[in-house]
Length: 512
Image 1 (cartoon, rainbow, N blue to C red):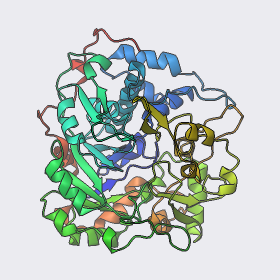
Image 2 (cartoon, rainbow, N blue to C red; image 1 turned 180 degrees about the vertical axis):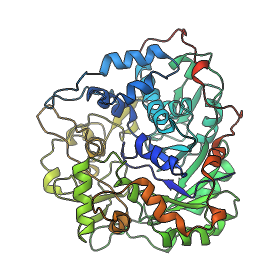
Image 3 (tube, rainbow, N blue to C red; image 1 turned 120 degrees about the vertical axis):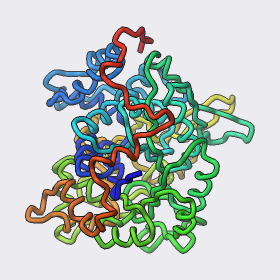
Image 4 (cartoon, helix red, strand yellow; image 1 turned 60 degrees about the horizontal axis):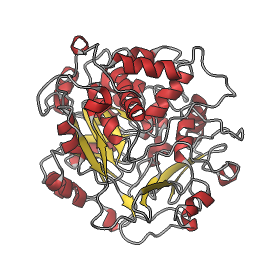
């Protein structure tokens, strides 16, 4: 198979959108869409008026037109909502989501992959977090309906996902074990998803995407290779210098003088053990330079995953004012990336760009009323009566404690859900009038962005990033662009993605 050398990382919520993934795929590498909060992003883009009509155009190709028409009718606002108006919210996920929410999630993921793949033959992937479990089944199915080539997943142990991909090829019902706080050993809580009930039947088989597990240890790679429910096609080995969520250090947490987690020898990955598995792997975390790409190839990697360089390129959805301000800081030798051990409600360290006016500054965050209006990072917990509840360390403290949480777990926690949507120009205006502020994440490569700036210190393209990195590769290592699609072309059935003329137009649908 012809695998890409460069994987564009999944960035925040919506930063790596369809436009960025398409630009990378057109340049012959793996463009990746972030799969976080795509139901909310679709709804908010429609309420902004969908100015260029991209999302409505994509929804016209959804295999069940009446469901797409219903979403457009409910959320689309011609000309966009008033600047002072709040966005209509999407209900938060539970273990038993409504049919309408599952349908919306399927469509949100379908739209991004459809647009990312439109008009070229490159390969496109989707990045999901194991930590955000509840939307994942509907999300993966929506991406597969649009012909996604790769599914990448980290922030946990995605042991069940390969088998789920196999089943969704044939539109079969699937389930996923939920991580439930307080559950006893005999407890079994599972999330169910039935494509037949959600969008109807009579669809032809789909193509299985390749599955890449994002890992931080050889032990996890070996475990997934042996015990996953289906084939793990490769690994992205991500170090602690990468942006976004990082795996916590092994052993007791120790902090440096400036309050960041300390990683030691136990956190170093044994690449030989991963090579011995005989599957391609990519290195991530400060590999966004020619020198580091050369090093990765010498270590036996297929290539690298690069995030930070793409996060600040022209095609990313990061709000333009935030992007320019941060680029100006790094090009001036200023700015700081801080591995915050407590910011994320997930409990994983989270890399934050410290910049005036963002939630990374405590005095700014202190002015924010604690509101949990989206709930993607809520924890599922077992109530005394055996039913499930939902709580988030970043929600109002009284509510969290009332649900059995410990008050000390709320200290320093930040609402990533709302702030990450503010990063892409979709900040919610809360009832009290507070407008959500951005919280931007980047890896340690943030300080090396000057290498891509060229003559314009404030603008560079995704293609320029790739051109800058790839000349170091010997010709035999650079796969021909026209053949890259073959890496994800064969799946459990070998079928191609659903063709437009194969989409049934008169299928009965469930209400939603």
